[in-house]
Length: 107
Image 1 (spheres, rainbow, N blue to C red):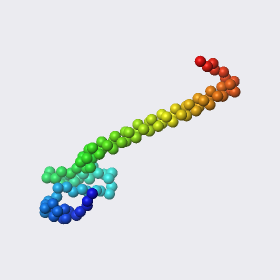
Image 2: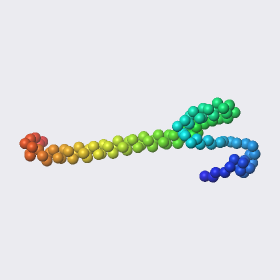
Image 3: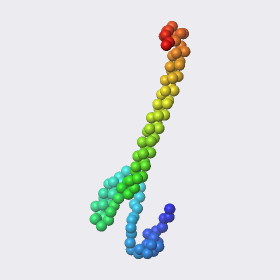
Image 4: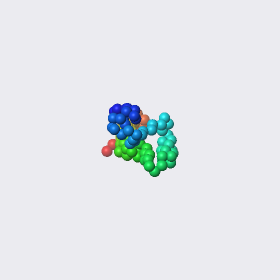
């Protein structure tokens, strides 16, 4: 990745006075859509203002897939832990059947 100033980029690409895109990175990203709407209204129809989600929908899809995968893995992990606790309790109860006076016929 390379970061250079706008005048240097214009000279490098022989595009004096032209800008193809400008990235604005606000400090507070919670109001991103509000900022984009304000920029759309002030820029007019000659310019296109897009948020990062509109520019890169595949990244949004990757984030959603990653979150869904995390929930699936957590569900499987909780299921394994639940069966481990259940089997431990079942063994504890079955070992103490005779000492507690209960007799359950086995199959």
